[in-house]
Length: 253
Image (cartoon, rainbow, N blue to C red; front, side, top):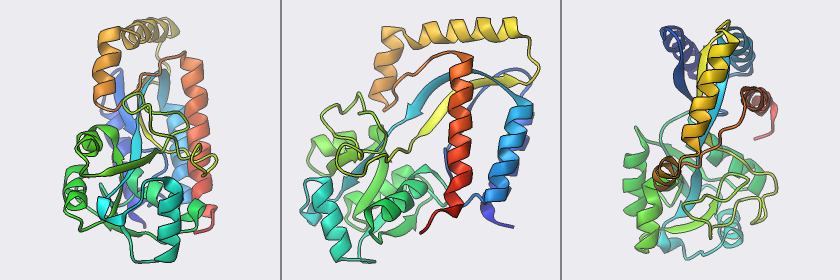
């Protein structure tokens, strides 16, 4: 049994331990999760969860060490293709968002970046700053200060829309990898069968809070862009994310 399946079951057990409503984070398409586990996840998610609000995505950006001498995504892809297996990217661990993003990049860009997993984002960023790895797909909040100080070079954001914390930075899709889109996200859910009136009241209160200028500004500084929307829109988003996740193991690379 693969690690991804065990991680899924662990997540499911934790989710079931909550009594009413809770915020839960999905790393959208963990690289270690089997196709069978994704099908199980889709079935259980529909049976167990009543969605309330899509709160915010965790936006990642592609950053590289200055020693590579690249300043754009095109330049980096060209360099990586010229050095297959010679450039390494650090991640926060096997099967997480940063790992998946790196492997998706390899597939879409035709590169062979080597994955180096760490125990967390901070450890990976430390080695990136020291030049022990050359590349990282990192949360904006972790690396933006180092980019401003010239210690790292930011090339693109990994979502389809630009990060509000770095609006000058192009998206992967804008920079040439059309359709590239990965991120983690947070949302508010409740157990299936929760009274619709309760869901609507929670959704309205949460949506109002998500639009608060103070909340928007605070979350933007940490690399989050508030989303909001209706429970139906969030449900559709989850269905699309699960569909993308279950399709990933069948893709080449």
